[in-house]
Image (cartoon, rainbow, N blue to C red; front, side):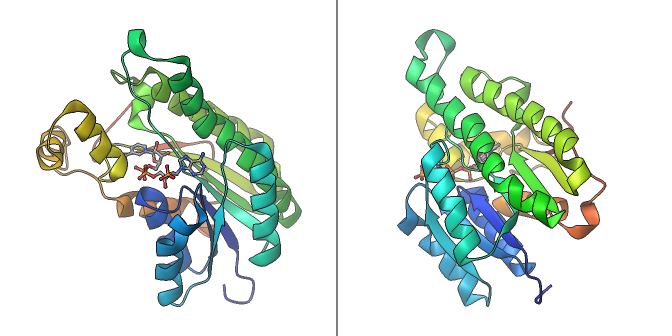
Length: 252
Ligand code: NAP
């Protein structure tokens, strides 16, 4: 793969699941653009990739902003290579029970997950169509099935699944696949923040979650990175429009 090294974009790649996916794709030979709100926050991921002999670029962008996305994707194409792999991973939570949820909580979650995935995918698809090859992986969640306190996030993550299936139908003829990963409980700053919000220590919170998970542990960002590596691989070209629950047990 060294001669025609493919370029991948990972949004929300500064930390957590996105950082693990970026490192895994780099170790598999992709040049990786690490996009996050704050360009300097991407430094840790980029440094780790370069220290391991890989190629990476830090790009600051807000995935929910059309102009920011256009500039970021153009910069990736010019400075790193035309992107044909896209991981829509950037995400936020603004949890609250419905009766306390503000319009801002609703809009900001919709904007990052849905508008962000739409804008990024629309900007990147032309490179995929030109190359007659593309791999899109969108981050959904087990919360798409419903989760107390997350009416905004659950709706967005269920929306990501319909978005993904439709991409697979529209873009399949160009050699582009689109799949969603729906993680269960993954140990990151996002779940640490949830523990803090509900007033439980993170260790206790993780232990309680693990007790409900058939494989008897919480997930790690690498669990998601390994799944993303499969879905973006050459050999996964006949897997498209799927939602893969990576949750240590079955989900509907
Ligand atoms: P995380 O640790 O909070 O990381 C998310 C990253 O996305 C942060 O670096 C954040 O930047 C960035 N981001 C937020 N808004 C952005 C925007 N508008 N533009 C660009 N970047 C933005 O979260 P995570 O746990 O790794 O989650 C990654 C993805 O997996 C999310 O889509 C999440 O919903 C999903 N997921 C996570 C879990 C879990 O258990 N952790 C489970 C299911 C699904 P800032 O730091 O600047 O905000």
